[in-house]
Image (cartoon, rainbow, N blue to C red; front, side, top):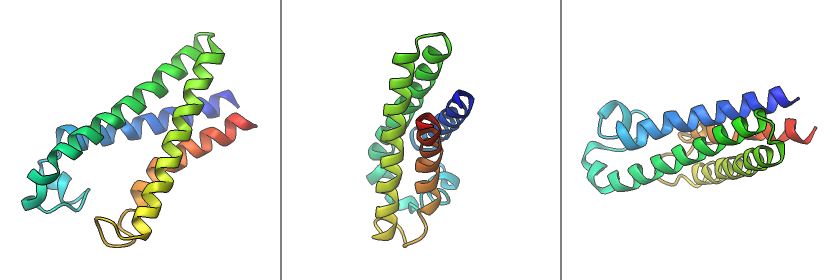
Length: 133
């Protein structure tokens, strides 16, 4: 079961690294800010700082998962497991927040944020379930 935990934790980390790249590094590209985040080009300057900061928040979450899995794999199971479990709870609960924001049509039409909510919440949820078994 440990392999399942590590696999889905690392999938969650990879998703967060990809989101970091989109938000912090590529947000000003129309293919990113408009097609991915549904932000009009005219609004980019107003949300650029937000996107940059949230991008790094995603990178730090990914780094925590990677460090946790590495520590666990190197034999420090207690610390590695605690780090992975805590960050996966954080990610999964953030996915619920994104789902609620989508249902309330916050920032985009209702239903357009489901993919982000699922990407944020499902891999860490699978990790948490596998860790509990």
